[in-house]
Length: 285
Image (tube, rainbow, N blue to C red; front, side, top):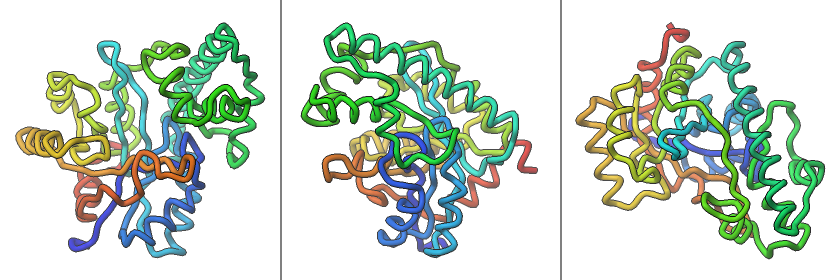
């Protein structure tokens, strides 16, 4: 496995991706990957389907999650790998996070209505026709798709740029847990926590502080990082004794184009997976 590669950050229809979990595994196989992680937002509901597909395509599937947190008014995402996806406490905590996301969605719809673009939650949920599980996550991409269907915007990208991105007209935020809490939850569920795409936070002091809070690694190689940022965070990981991971942050296809990046476009040696498993939290022992 030392000569093979893994993409450790991908999303599916279980959250805000456009492809079913099995499709991500198929795409990983087509990209020549040995392994792929399913890291949906605040849910692990797509993992089982992906694991079954992994057996079919000969691809190792890493059970993962991406937890949404806030620090200093900034969204901070923490990835978890090798979790016990049947841990009842962890599943309950993820459900609480999804309920928080639902409150945020309702605030966004209220703002859109004030802007003359009314949408109902029923319309938003109609954009999730591929969802099959009750613990899938509904988020801004589904709202954006409903806006496009209504003709309020021409594309999903326009919906984000003009209305849904941070600082845009219909953006809304609600209280979220701190990243330290997410790190602790992941470890308590037997997983290895990794800080996602640190270059997006514009807060290296926070990154360095979190590096000492139980992290197993830093996602230095990411589709939204510049080469300089990739080098910087790989070096930071080395100084802190943390593993270096990589992920495309693939969210499927929007308007026929891969979003954020093609699956497998950011990859790391699959040997890192075993190293992550060796740094998991207490429930893995």
